Image (cartoon, one colour):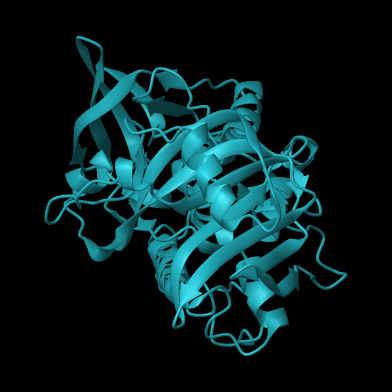
Length: 408
């Protein structure tokens, strides 16, 4: 039986962040993913300023900015008329702004940085089970027809909404699902909309949204990630009771014709779509794990929280989960962690996940910024710059409650 200090399951942006943070602190890591190849789609595209600050600390912000595009704001059209132009303005002392970066580019940057620290992702390997011991975890891994066992001091589940790690822990994942299905597509649009702005267009009837599309800019000339309600011929009935209905359903792929029909209905000006790179149908649930870990096993990212993609909060929250957990695990592996340090991960990050789930559900139903008192606060919150851990067991009572936002 082989051994490692930390086993990370899932090599998306969250798992790669966890592995990279551990490796750059000198901890040996095995990271596995059941997919034989990294996906080449733009599922998550928005990068928040706080995530860029984290990547700066981790040494990957420069290569990330090199393959990203700026996100200046959003222009909103309702019933063919422009009703709002939101500028994503932040205070001058904030070092980074919002950018857009397709998920495959994010994974490429993190994978390269991890390789530079001597670790490569072991692909085509699936976690089939695990058991905790007094001093670690023994994981069962399947590689094709072969099954092996790996002993690790800690296990981190970054394996998505259908997490095998979460199920193995027996942790609850309470919430609900949206009845709507959506289409996503990575396409080029030939319109004259200003670069660096998301475009949201909708039609209404008696105040109710009847049709909608959102286009988020991607690197490349005229390239956008377009999302909209699913076309009738691609729609299905809801998933079975109790199922986690969340994520891509790649078996049903919208065509360029489906996307063009949406543009013909909703685009602010006559627009043609072309160069379809990728498309899928997408379902949305909102759920939160009852705990972010148990014993020597931890959850991060979609394994711990899922919610509507409004404001690009999901992947960013997961990356910050992994960063918070990574440095604590490194100290624990090195025998330098104070009592209760690892317990602080759940205490600090689960309230963040709960707030993000609640806020994104509210925004999905009522509109971006719903519930905020002013635009500046709304933008800072979307940038994830208002986070703090003042209720953490690591924060003493003599620390002023106004601080804490600079904690990892």
